[in-house]
Image 1 (cartoon, helix red, strand yellow):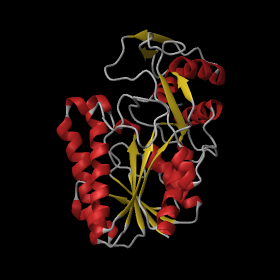
Image 2 (cartoon, one colour):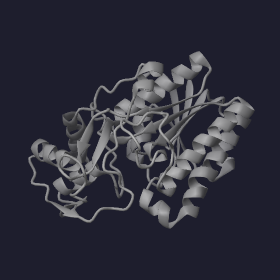
Image 3 (cartoon, helix red, strand yellow):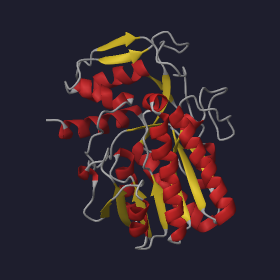
Length: 324
């Protein structure tokens, strides 16, 4: 079947594109390349250089006929969203409205949306399941939650079926080495650790060493990006077969502290990786761990590549190729 992957040249989007191609689907990537990379495009996938803020470009792309679109195009820096909320509202919320309207006008009845654990805010209990209160603590998380609400209304009013896939901490790279385009100005822990290991940065800043955790540093649930990518294909199949929308949390269900990640990276890379504890960042919960029970129940999903060794090893391989 034909799938349009919006934001498919980015880090997660390229892995999602790869997963749909590996499953035998015909895929076209729609991306403005503002954060994505041509290095993440595949010869067997089509490519449209376009912007979700240009409705006419979405209209022309979708006029070619697709069975579904995957929506991964968004601004995603939580801190920046608190400084410039208008930019995030326009790009994430208004951009999504453009996508949904273009999809409905083109007769595309399915959207698979890249959501985030940021919709939940500070956890009131762990692990975080789908029923957990949704009280985002940054504007980025607010935009993701508003998009989920938009999707429920488009389902109710226009029959648009959707999957909202809430990632926890995506990490890792394709185990076969087919994707090596590195993130620009990364803000996530593992890419920054790799940049320190490669000498691009002098040291790693660890934000807070006095949290109520086993070693004082924050604990997060890291899930391999290839596992997340596979879930998009499984969500596509679910909607196709069940004609129902769904929202699921996806994580490894295992918490890893910042120091545990750094220590493991030192072993895998053989590099010193200098690190220094600095002040906490506002709004950083001590611990975030997912419950993926519903994803397993509805999609048959389970993490296959999300061990710490695979997460770090596959990322290290990509960085050794990508930074010379």
